Image (cartoon, rainbow, N blue to C red; front, side, top):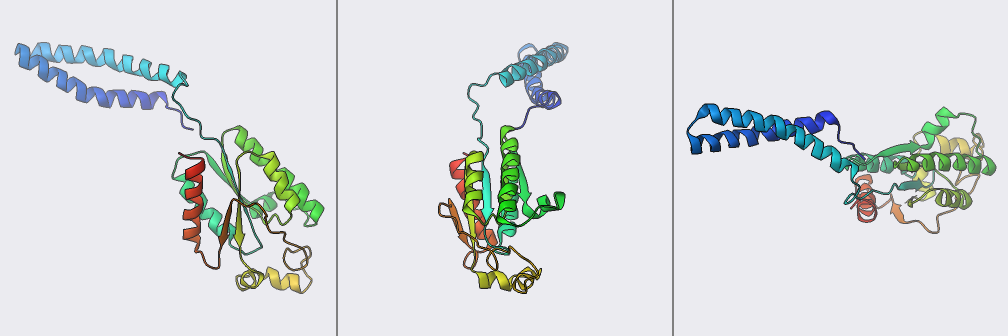
Amino acid sequence: MYRETNIRSIAKGVSWRVVATTTTIIIVYVFFGRLDLAIAAGLIETVLKVALYWGHEKIWQRIHWGKKRIEPFNLWFTGLPLSGKTTVADKVYEELEKLHIPIERIDSKDIRDLIPDIGYTREDRNRHMHRIGNLVKTLQNNSISTVASFVSPYRESRKAIRDMVTNNIVVYIKADIETCKERDYKGKYVRAISGELQNFPGINDVYEEPQHAEIIIDTETTSPDEAARIIVAYVKKHYVK
């Protein structure tokens, strides 16, 4: 996860030697009553042991025994548009960052801004999910976990993600259609109902609820902060110990 740099190892060695050398000088002076001898012994010891400490640290960095690798995981947030996926996923990402593990945030809006010609038909969405699956898989190959939020309305595309990546955790952000409409500050539901937006999950396209979600959060009864606590606790229990 994090590699100890040479300069950090040296700084740690120097700070420790200041304490240790002072102790050595005091002991030599107490026993021999000669300040010059005490200072000389302290200086010689400092130079030798800083070098030895640095070498000792570098040797242990090369030894894998006793190290435990945190297996990368993928938190996959799915739910109707405006169900609260992005809000909860953002909070979860912020909390997981505090654990100092390699982790990246992936949101559907950011990806569509990068690739604006992605369609919304079932075929387009499934093809898009395969792209995202490959992205997550590449990150995992580099020991990076992910927090991803996508409507991903079809079971076959969510299954494809589960088959492509390791340690996939489906988080179903549940909210009924009326609640989502009330949260529609972007006016998307209104546009979908009027026919301006096609292939809109919950209105003129289906949203197939997950049948095997690891975590289900009902945002009508659970606040975003509480939802984040539940999800982070799950991750800590199963993947970050």
